[in-house]
Image (cartoon, rainbow, N blue to C red; front, top):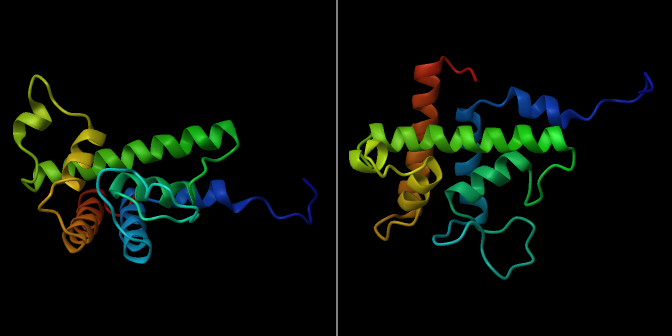
Length: 149
């Protein structure tokens, strides 16, 4: 790289994000672009930033849009972070009593994405509740991890 060129900030920016940061970004994304149930993203749209479910918004918050990073290592790192944040949210949902213990630790226990998708798609759910939980999960992560990754 030429000394006058600036390195791509994406990888470094992604490395500095904590799960709490991403959960807060996810809440903000849903506020700005809309929240849906039953699909990861609003179907049949050409909008580059469509309405999304909680997992879809986590993914967009990490990827910066609908497309995964082109670089193989960045894509791998981003996907690992999606999984980590989804697991953090699932853990919070369980400890907060929003997921039955049998769904979390039972013989046929659900995966973190299944837990979050089930919570997101619950017919009693409303956007305000989703935003509150995302922010509470972020605060919980900061409390239990000292604001670190």
